[in-house]
Length: 114
Image (cartoon, rainbow, N blue to C red):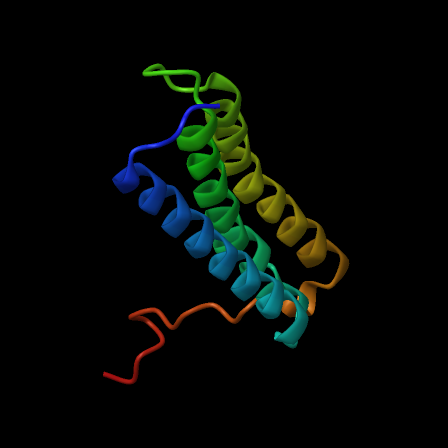
């Protein structure tokens, strides 16, 4: 493995640090939020962004020259595509099991007293 340019080393280090912070915030959100629907925000938003930052840093450090590593790019793409879809399916299953979780419909113009 060859030595990186200093600016590339700082960029990769800051991406790993930022990714670790986002992953920690996602894990804290998963542990601390009160309901199932609120707990989904931690892993689907913050943790996905954290894993994406770490994978981009890995792509910068371990690429074999000027071309980008395709493996990390594909992993990042698949994570960014599958996390929202799985969260959507989990919410649909939860609403089917417990219909009382569904929020009330917003008032329409017919419902207003004017």
